[in-house]
Image (cartoon, rainbow, N blue to C red; front, side):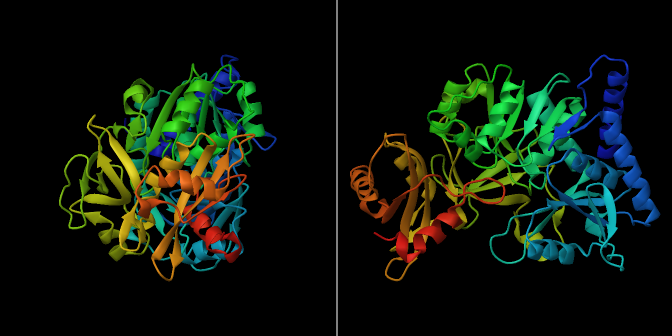
Length: 483
């Protein structure tokens, strides 16, 4: 296909608007959420009005525009309007802390902000022109638990290319109802929403996740649902049986779906195609996929590379490891970021011989599929022994009483780090942390047995809904968490 992403979105919405006007497909191209329903024509009108306002404000080509979003229908129109005017959209949560908003404003130098479709001038000075932003569509800031957040710059042409790949992989349809409880400041939420618009599907944005909200969407006819695994766990919690009569496709991403949750999801939705997707913001997302046709053989893995993606698994020196051995996963893709905003040194350090460093530890299985075994930064160094926390998660999940587990390293004056874990239990199950430690001692090497296990009602998550090992570490480092 030729043309820009903005042109493709504009054309798709125009087709949907014509279909609505002729009563062929009343739901085509509509965006719903937060009590608001925008038809395709209204999305176009809002985007075009914003683009005119931005041009009147003399927006420069490639100028960043802050786009505080609340997962409302107008948020998509704001992104499109920014692109139609030649700007670079910077999506971030409208409810973000003032310090976070100020960090992003300072990092981008933005003078323009669009909230709820209304243009606001937040600074007088036009930000300096950056070569990196000349062909950019998005600056997506990572959550950055420490220090300043990093701005990942994604090119418009590359983003469109990735959407076309995903269209061939997933085949959204015009009669689909796509439900997105993911934040639109999160690359997963962005691409699912854009793909729904390009496909002419009905899009339903969920402003605040809850299992009850998804129950209602599924019962009302959702045919495609995109979630991170922590959301799926909540949806499939014991004693809950969501009715999903029209759900034909479930997309899981943001973290590993894992063996048990994949099994539970297939049991709950036996007629639904489940895709386990893996990728990074820096690579444009969805670099690996375990499709429904391969689940039986590949469960527990992230599958194989998607179209156009190459990879390596290397040791600390950058040399390839043997199949079955763990090493860092490196990814090469034509859809990767242009770089980190205003940080060429960090951008260069993110690559090794043209491959982007994922920061994930992985291994190549005997069946030819890749399996994630942990994050390099999450590796626990306990008394000189290196332990992948994901391995401990999977061990604990084999206990019949445990429904969720998350492990992390805790600062320890004697060992350097000790191993801590938080777990959730099945209804009616009664077991203590010490009893679980004793059970684990019979399953794995002594140095891998968690030093502390805390039973909790739910596992902690971060701002995007993904499970947070950092939160586990903070919780278990508190003196009251010790046995």
